[in-house]
Image 1 (cartoon, helix red, strand yellow):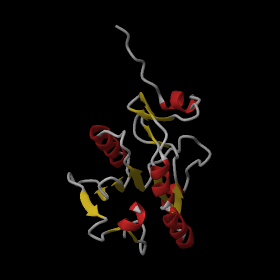
Image 2: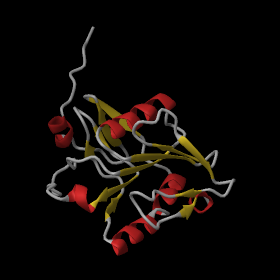
Image 3: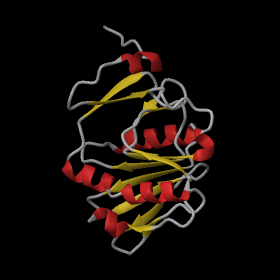
Length: 182
């Protein structure tokens, strides 16, 4: 029986990613995911309003599809991430993966995502110091917000008129979930 040799972050960084394939590293295991579809990308791009807000308020940086080195042999690539100015200080921004956990992670759940894999990803972000993780479910128009120290997520509904907001990280920013799911 063959055994798998776990990859290190350095091994991961040296990989060539073929066109149409996305990689992440979870506890030394290479995770291969299909590229996002049109609707996924369209929803991700609606967070450009967050980018504009963060830039005008000088709060930090918003990026999409960027690799972040978390704890251990873990590299994750969130759909959208916010990194505060304070967290960016002293970080080598030329390094790939970026050697810091984002303050805020936004993931748009695709039909290929499995619940157990998503919860592992959430726990890896939070363990590495991410302050909030949002999972957006386009099919149900629900958003789940996870924060450190709470076992259960907060669930917000687009159909109930609720909003995406993180007042501690992004004071003054809010967007209705219905606008994101349109």
